[in-house]
Image (cartoon, rainbow, N blue to C red; front, side, top):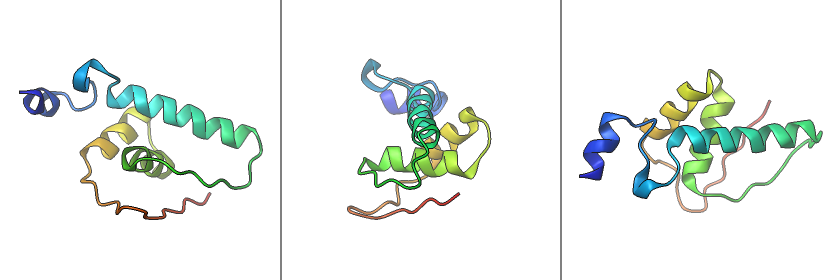
Length: 88
């Protein structure tokens, strides 16, 4: 039943009553912005595939809602132990 609800509103669906994709995207974007404001020239992040998809989507640009929806609707093609490099 949850998959039907998720398909109806992918951006705002709360799996198990937790955060929705938009809330997670805002949290990930805030973290990314903190790294930039700290003047961090580079960083190594170890995280789950969902966070990696969000970071990649945010890096591609657009409004945060668009980035969150892009990340949530893309198939998970990130392999176990895969490295993704994002450059400004």
